Amino acid sequence: MSDITHPAGFRPATTEHPLTRWLLVGFAVLAMGLLVFAPLVAVFAEALRDGVTAALASLGNPDAQAAIRLTLAIAAIAVPLNAAFGIAAAWFITKFDFRGKAVLITLIDLPFSVSPVVAGLCIVLMFGANSALGGWLVAQGYPVVFALPGIVLATMFVTFPFVARELIPVMVEQGRAEEEAALTLGASGWRTFWTVTLPNIRWALLYGVLLCNARAMGEFGAVAVVSGKIRGQTATMPITIEMLYNEYLSVAAFSLAAVLSVLALVTLLFKTVLELRHADQLAATHRH
Amino acid sequence: MHIEIDGISKHFASTAALHPVSLSIPSGALVALLGPSGSGKTTLLRILGGLEFPTAGRVLFDGQDATGLSVQDRRAGVVFQSYALFRHMTVFNNIAYGLNARPRATRPAKAEIARRVTKLLDLIQLPDIGARYPSQLSGGQRQRVALARALAIEPRMLLLDEPFGALDAMVRKELRQGLRDIHDETGLTTVFVTHDQEEAMELADLVVVMSMGRIEQVGRPADIRARPATSFVRDFITA
Ligand SMILES: Nc1ncnc2c1ncn2[C@@H]1O[C@H](COP(=O)(O)OP(=O)(O)OP(=O)(O)O)[C@@H](O)[C@H]1O
Ligand SMILES: [Mg+2]
Image 1 (spheres, rainbow over the protein chains, first blue to last red):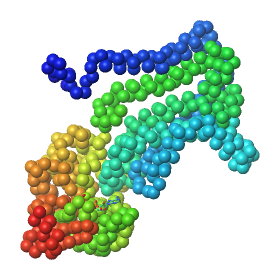
Image 2 (image 1 turned 90 degrees about the horizontal axis):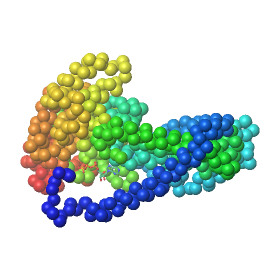
Image 3 (image 1 turned 135 degrees about the horizontal axis):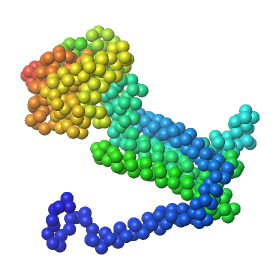
Image 4 (image 1 turned 30 degrees about the vertical axis):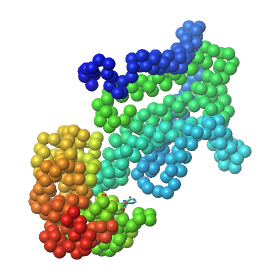
């Protein structure tokens, strides 16, 4: 459309006055710079304050190493499980008619509206050593609270909505016709899922998984409550960063924070590369 | 295949989409379900295809009770109103889908599948579009691909929901004849839904006029024109 010339003094209805445009763009850039870019740069600057060697040395500390391993392990468990649950929930909500659908949709959003700290407390109440279930599990040698299962549960609770939220609108828009067609052609429900449903939602699923992953690695509040913050055992990266910071170990804290940021940036980079590579396909399915 | 609909009714929560209806469709007939919006045509077609199950009544295929038969086992070639082509697959893979979905024992070899798809593309007179995606086709081409996909499974009957609904008048006429030719060539019992009385009268051997979940009249087009059974039928076919 840019090659259409307009008579002097006229602007297309959707184009703003140049001054308005520059003000808006300027404001957006300023906000991005102040709120996103500057803090990110500050994290890396702070980490490298005493030089690269000091930063790397702090990351070599066994507790820091344990924190990195723990966070990666949590993401590796929680994200695939949430992807599976998210697909199941979205499938159930969009492909079937049943009473109480609205309630279920609200329930899926619950983790977004409940404070993570409250979520963590709920898990402690349910699985803590003082509860019947928790006491029994501890007696069997499977403690949940102050251990990996509790942290995974807390992380899964907080990150549950991401996948389902991405999938539901896409699946509603696509309807059931293609699945029904596959069934009439003789495909089993399982085959229909793998050959029709999943390929149709793969982009939304990928976005959901990436968001879920970013949040799973960064979760603080709920994990802080259920983990007990045992250094080298149940302290995740965000928890360890906070502890180091409170002990004025600024280089160590920011080095670990830098690693966490890099993990997030890698996720974003991955998403962008995929978007660029499959731009035409994305345009064809009009999403994002 | 002879289709017998025996006292079928269908309720959705509180609404009755079909009051008990009975209908006998002779083997090899081309039948139109004709009626205004909301008269229950799609519901009846979906019950035949096994996509919806009746609240009461039976469906018989060649005298055998098929009421509880699963969608997959009905082997009905269904053409959906919006065609429902698999958007992430090429036309070739769309048409081959039903053959690929067969259990290994009855699945044709790859070359045989390719041969059959090519033959079907010839049948719908679109031999060169196998590599395209559905989004790269016109409405009329999509409709024909949907028909080819349904025919690929060697169906026992053809069920089409408003097959010409989304097309302009010229293409409609052309595809109407195309459906008639394919029906005559394959001899398949064919049921199609339409709310266009002219289309029903021109194309079908037998027209079933429906209104508000009931069958008002069943008959050959000429008989319905000459002797409408109810005032509804008279108004509807002259409208
Ligand atoms: N899944 C459903 N849930 C609730 N009601 C339904 C459902 N499907 C159909 N109905 C109702 O059943 C009645 C018949 O619907 P049907 O789709 O069979 O009509 P139709 O004759 O195909 O109409 P159209 O020409 O508009 O497609 C309508 O009143 C409709 O609202
Ligand atoms: Mg309909």
